Image (tube, rainbow, N blue to C red):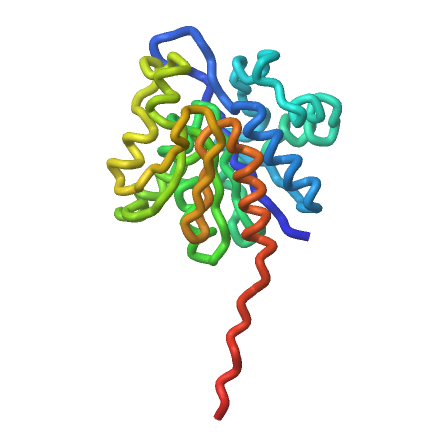
Length: 237
């Protein structure tokens, strides 16, 4: 059985507003059930452990997904969500891949979390995939700080500057994620029309643009994990 680590944000405060943020619920539940339905074992973690904050906007009726409704009736999943493992207590050696859901929270905590940055580099160095969606790719910023040039030339996707403006939160964040990732050398590709699903794969790195991309990003990760291992032909003496 393949084992997936999901790394969630612990941050809930926006800037210049009383509005809250946290995990965008559908960006957790959509991938979570993709993994569960594929027969994978999922472990949840976060920088502070315990129950991560949930962005209230992601629980509004217009943003509810089928996976959200399934989660509300899933006592096992809700218990796991309420008792996430502290991020510094997990090790890449114990998992086959790691997935970072979004919500605005990661641009504050996971972007500067050394444990998360080390974890990402450990996964990739071990030949294991790293996936992230929406603001989840902010976690790559920490990996880039620990290994300068890490993002140079990589093709990724993430919540776009246009989308940040359209949701009215560009004045409540410390930086625009797309801009910051591009400053670190990444080529950020997005859908031609905001809020449409878009997924990029660059080697072992899989990234999705926005909430609608969460399920497809998880499916892309599953497809990568299910690829047959390349067998090196024997060399005749």
